[in-house]
Length: 260
Image 1: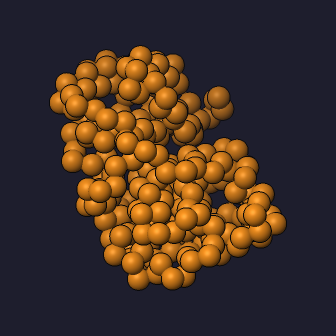
Image 2: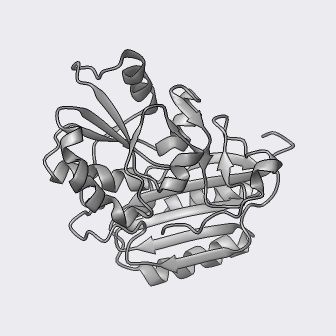
């Protein structure tokens, strides 16, 4: 831990069937509140999505507690650091979806989209094709204002305002993806997982999600083939490829509200 950045920030999600959302909400709120953590936890029948920050020992204690539930044992947070607490309060909510797509047929809790790790994506981008020689397209599934902060060099994006616009945008661009290996990506993996499933259901055979999203990519391979920073929905506003927060002069703009 860098003494100048003593606050541990985590983001994590897991698509898994949860039939006790209200009870889990209450338990998570009580546990996180006891540990003096702040952030947002979203729970739905399809899984859990969380962004939390606090002292490292307390944050990791919460994750360990969460993993004691067999349904949540495989949740794997992405970590970054900040000088101060980036969240103003603790919110724990039950939602219809942990990331809203408004497409009920997409159910990652039943079957995950095929994933590709950061090292493999870097290798594909280094060579310009996948292991079978197909051209590779990186597809940014985030909102337009996030893309403006930073993205993979040459990435395709559809200038959407919110993730629930993704299916309609995809329908207009399916032909652009035919015959290519598509790597969908987002901040931490949750949106690109649903996006990859949707595109496969539309008949595209070689579509993968970037496992762990941009944050995991930064952690494993840094800024290779990436330009800019990664927008995050808290008072840091963004993180650099070394996972440090943006400099103070970049924080004057008020962060948009999360599309959750």
